[in-house]
Length: 398
Image (spheres, rainbow, N blue to C red):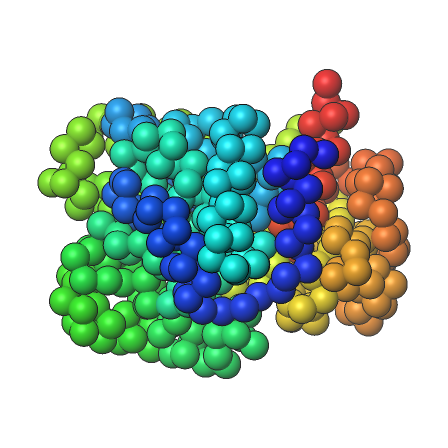
């Protein structure tokens, strides 16, 4: 393990500490790297990663040196920081972490894991001479570490219930936290159409004097799932609206960017040994409500499910909606000890009348699914599980 990765690993237990004071103090020591380029900030409950990826792809296709910051990573930590469509290289990561550690030490501050990841993005994108950065919010928005920038656009994807212990127990409260990414001088765009959410976004936009556009319709995309067409429409409309300040954006570059978007682990289809293997990081009720119709309509039976989820999610709601869609369930633990126990998940499936087998080891769970009679295998419940699946099936397809 390199010194940079060892340092980041040492921060893993730092937990969630909402607030912007720590990151702002370190950024001052660093000479405000987040102001070295224009920024687009993307918040929401679901779809923010794929929308960010499409926006970044459009900007790259338009000839802008673009940084893309997303979380979490699926296989390689360097996925979190993309420059020009490629993962950050090892040398730039080492240098950026060194700069972060020096500034944090000088400020007498020990950043959280996510704060450190965000600071690396700001540092690396400045060092790489990026012209634009697309920043995916980690959680919420108002107090998220990414929300220290002065964005040219605030993009808000569908909002639902998630992280309620931090964001609130109503859609209005959650929307208010997400709306915190709307700033004076930015344009704001969203695909949300629920009046409870839109009213909150409108109030925030009016308060800071930012125009808010409700994006409707769909746009074709290579990403699977009908909901991705709405995410694509949001990315496309954002790009169109920014063409006045980023004049290299054109209709042809937008189309090239959308077509070339790749975003792994989000309804990704892998074909291996005569089976269709679908991988998705769906981990909350809002995501399942969108994905369930796709499963019922597009995935042939019989179907097997490999399911693992973090214990702090709404396990019964997600499992209760997903398990009845499958003929056989294998439950697993993608990120112990934070995962829900495989035994408990299997019992939940059994109570719903679905055959279930616990297999705590994800790789063994994948192998069991592949050994079964079903030609359709769906792997979901956590992005950690999606990452494990991608690593496993990539290695077995070579």
